Amino acid sequence: MLPKIDTPTYEITLPSTGKKTRFRPFLVKEEKILLMAQQGEDLDEKINAIKQIIRNCLIEDIDIDALATFDIEYLFVNLRSKSVGNIINLTYKRKECPNKDDGAGDCDLPFTMDLENVKVEETDQGHSTNVQITDRISIVMKYPDFNVLNKILLSENYDDIVEVIATCIEYITEDNEVLNASDYTIEEIIEFIENLTQTQFASINDFFETMPETNCAVNIRCRQCEFKKEMKVSGVADFFS
Image (cartoon, rainbow, N blue to C red; front, side):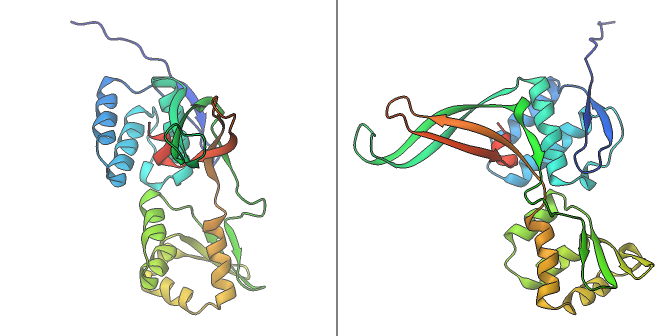
């Protein structure tokens, strides 16, 4: 019988819930999944690859599809850091660089990102999953997963957007009564949303716009012209490297 190689495990805290879980680094079989997805241009394929790798590497049984987008990004970043290394080489495209050798034009500036510095930050200090609609009625939202978030970002159809938002309502409270959204049909939840005022609907929209995000502060510098820029890298497309 061939020897079985022990792999280390690491503890991580899920940003959305504060719950701790453990994971192992990804192995050659997970690296294969990653490389195959990297060769394609389809973002959905990359997201599915990330989810599959996380499922394989988590020690505890967690519903990956129910996790918030920033949970999945944070898990993957830590997996990648412990499995391959914490340094990623990226490129910043400077538009209309005046110091380009062949005249003004786009210039590619290489820089590195340390995954150990990646963190989940709230984009707004007033962000809350509780959305106050009236003095008596409030909505408790749940964070969308990648598939739901993509529908919100890509859809230009009002009905589709309302339907997606409806799937992110966890429950509605009226005075002391708690109405669980799962006890109602999606059509009933949509009807509730469509009867909101524009101001009330905007409050729900604020929830999505101020959600926490996974990011990493980086410094970019051109040694030729001393161009400097500080920025934050965020999103699965940037971390998928």
